[in-house]
Amino acid sequence: MGRLLFVTSWWAAGIALAYPIPPQTIWSLSARSELIVVGRIRKNAIEPTTPRTARFAPSHRAHIDVVEVLSGPPLVDFSVPYLASSSNGPAPARFIEGETALLFLSRYQDEWAVPALSYGARYPPDAVSLAELRSLVGLALIEQRAGAKEPSLAWPKHFGRAGNDSRKTTG
Image (tube, rainbow, N blue to C red; front, side):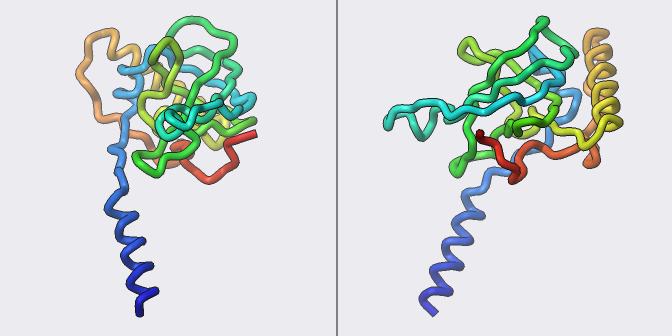
């Protein structure tokens, strides 16, 4: 009985500490991003941290080759610091080596960062889904530049993983 109570308490505590992330629309991601790219995740590397900063500092760095810039400055490649996992908060963005992703980025402390956690790194399952996403981002950017109010464009489920799946993310 004691083990069952412990396991039940541990499981309930995990639920109580969960941080649900409200869905981000294509519109809001496009509006708040300084750089939107289709990129191939070339490699992940572990970042050195000190014992004092290990809990809060980015633990990894993704190196990304730019396939296409949809919005923002022209780039060939760049890197993004990130937390590999988070037991204390919402799901961080994942960077899956060898995969092509649609990335929504903003500058933070002189580096590119994903501002929308796992929603900011999208992995379309195929070329058709990537083309659809690219078109929706383009439409959102055109309408935003014309001063349109936020439409109800939401992420359709078939457009790929949010980036917070269990695939290997380190090299």
